[in-house]
Amino acid sequence: MSHSDSQAQQVQQSRATAPDFLIHNEGDHVAVAVQDIQPGRHTAVYMDSEREVTITVLEAIPLGHKVALSDLKEGEAVIEYGLPIGLARQPIQAGQHVHIHNIRSARWQNSI
Image 1: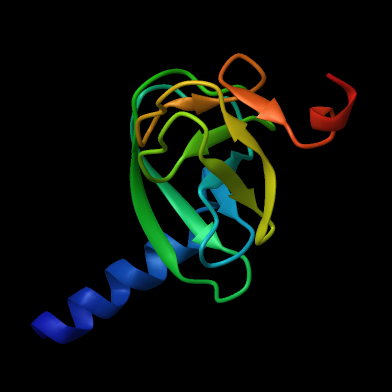
Image 2: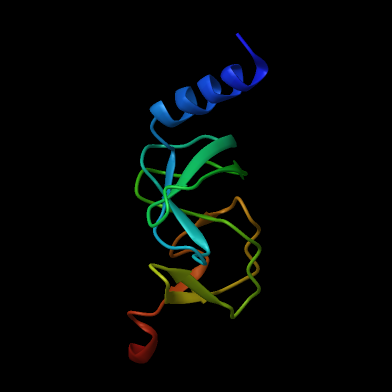
């Protein structure tokens, strides 16, 4: 088997494995866990392009919760679905759990 055949087989095998996270749009700041996730390296797939990326998760992420794909500053808009879903309450490091403990939901901003 040639080197290129081996690489093609590895790519095919990795895509046959379900991703750990889904990213809705290019430019999103977060990915959504499709199962309970433990810290370490995990696969994420962009839903709009099917591009696969590897992300390093720093803490446990429950099913349906989000992980930061990049560092976010306090007060920065958090983007999902290509839209702001809230503001970072504190600095958030790439790989950290993103949820109500560290973002202020855009849904409730006008009620506070």
